Amino acid sequence: MLKFSPPRLDQTTVDAVSEVLLSGWITTGPKTKQFEKEISDYVGCRKTICLNSATAGLELVCRWFGLKEGDEVIVPAYTYCASANIILHCGAKPVLVDIDEKDFNISVNNIREAITENTKIIIPVDIGGWPCDYDLINELVNEPSIKAVFTPNNEVQKKLGRLLVMSDAAHSIGASMNGKMTGSLADITVFSFHAVKNLTTAEGGAVCMNLPEQFDCDEVYQILNIKSLHGQSKDALAKTQVGNWRYDVLEPGYKCNMMDIQAAIGLVELHRYDETLKRRKEIVNYYANALGQYDWAQIPDFISESKESSYHLFLLRIKDITEDQRDEIISKIFDKQVSVNVHFQPLPLLTAYNTRGYKMEDYPEAFNKYHNEITLPVYFDLTDSDLELVVNAVVESVSEVI
Image 1 (cartoon, rainbow, N blue to C red):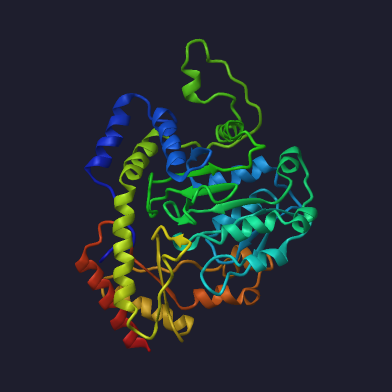
Image 2 (image 1 turned 180 degrees about the vertical axis):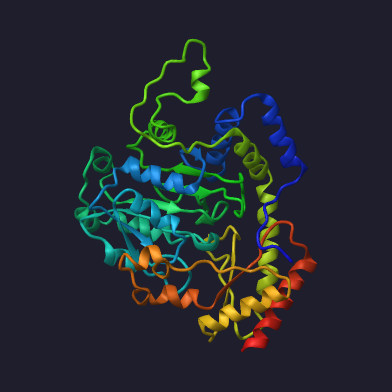
């Protein structure tokens, strides 16, 4: 069976992890700090903190911004549950909006219509690695009429003076828009380094800060660092300094720091990430050329005058089929020893959300994209013969169903 998305792991990775294991320092330490700096340099943001997941990063930022019960956060209906779960964790309300007709990303017009005096944060999600329309979103939150609606509840919110734009860029490290890398397109950008992502640390994530100049990003880093370590005033590395053992616990925080073991894997992946992106681009171009000749195939965008994807997912859509037909096609592809997937089930289809009153019929474009979508495998170690196998399995399976 051809796998769907195994991580890129080889002897270079093994050697890097072994070095850390034998160093005597395996938790958050010099490798993690190096990884944070190199991510900041790569994406062009002001500061980065690495954590044990993107989910943790999203929630810590919400906590830093003071999100609480009665607040609202705008998030697309078409995303993985993590984007919205963290809002519920904070006691706030996810306000789901539909996606745009032209791609899988959140509609800026729908964002505008959803803003109320309770709105505090907007979470655009770069589905498949394709950047959202950040120029339009940033313009929107800075419009005088939209800023006038914003009602700050604490000093951090007053300092910003508008809605916070926090990009869920779990898929899109390495993507760009208007010459700027994802990670520098929003106030806050959160990356995922989960095992299936382009750049992995096994599990992990990063919060990239590109806040306006009135914020000291070093100070925000320290606040997030404290929140990630049970509210402890010093991390393990700081306490190793002579006479520096004493610490305080400033708040009942969380435990979600990144370990040096993870950072060592991430540094290997970051140092060869240009090579990774090059191969992923070759793969999606192969699929686009091979499948684009069929009338039933809808090929996603990967590059335009202003944007370039990170080539994380190939979100193939099959025209004029039902959800049941899509599922049957998937079963037949698996029968041909090829693994595929669906990204994603919109939130209103999930029990955790439809039991909270969210209805799929309120988000027609999200369902329109979901019901005929099949995600094809894209990863570095796919060979050209593997790609031929995938294409043949898809074409044959579609022909057997429609």
